[in-house]
Image (tube, rainbow, N blue to C red; front, side):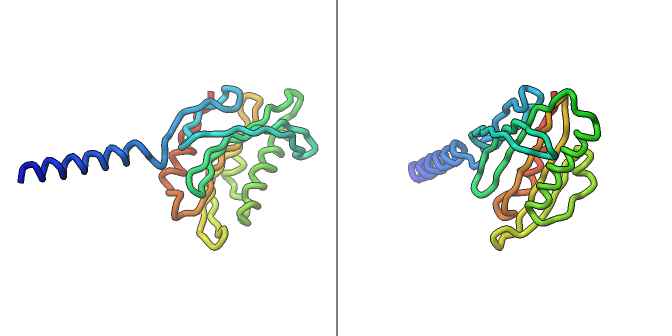
Length: 169
């Protein structure tokens, strides 16, 4: 009887150890935006870069992202010319925030233009989905943090954790 209990405990311990070693979310802290910010990503990241045209300006836009299931966690950033005035930087924030809202077919919410986190809900491929975003200018860098995915696999807690982890330096 004791041997059976020991074997059961051993099997349970091994199962627990295996589950603990293969987490769906394996959070890691990374610097982004040329060391202007730190953020926690839930899995291995990849970074891509391309030149884009926004509001008549050419920007070198970098995107660091990670995926877990059907959810994507990303931080995009572009250095801005020091010759831009405040009206131009406000238009850039508006353009990026508007693009996020349009992506999910929702109107732009006021806090999106203030550099605050905003949430939009939609239906993508027949599934209720959420998008949390934040667009801001910090020390001459446009920064856009976004997490999106189906509600069934992207919990509000994990989405909020990602957005809350963004710390400006």
